[in-house]
Image (cartoon, one colour):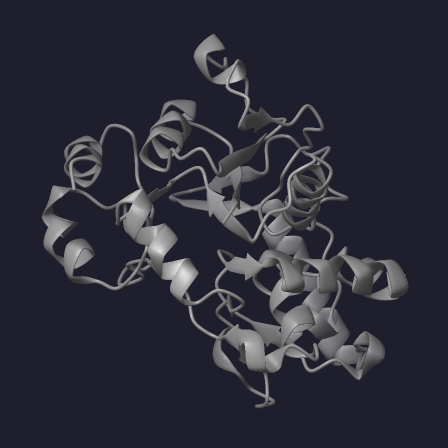
Length: 297
């Protein structure tokens, strides 16, 4: 079995190197997108590896914007054009790390060959968690405002993000005027974790579906945080439901008041005991001991 690991990174390229080494196998290929905003130098050792591909088609990824999905699709296309027939495409961030040895991961997918693993939940409630339907009904323009390089500003003791505030204002205005975007193709909207492991049949379906339905593509260009909606919605509404496991293979600690916890050596027991194959998020300095322990498993 051949695997394409698609890695979206924006900092700490050293951690990407550790990912590559930890997942090293002759049938594992790595396709890496480094955010265009990041000025990262790549070691010649990794540039010369035949199974490691740092894409030159780099784009500026903006929080909440469609460019995150665009970068992912670019990596998929690069993997599909590489001359290799991959069984699985696994999307990771530059701050993920495997919690199981490479051979264990291969055995897992061999046992479950043909199944795709993507966390997805349909928005069946008019008032779902985090008001998620707002993200479908009302437009957002994070990528279109990317010319604003310094987004945050401080008033008194509080810091505000202009793009987020503008999007919230647009949402509020749309609600007051009764404006709603129509979801194309009568799709049931879904949400879920950005990180997934899709079998090649699912990847083929997504690419063909987008080619035949450009209005779906365009719809998500103006959607808040489509990385948590795009693949989830397409796969949920696909004819491949019997081949989809609606669950994540990642361990992520969301018991915080903001972004997920940065894992450290105190998390080793829960990671080892977990059935998850991957975890996030890691920091090359704060997680150094934990990373070393996982590498030695």
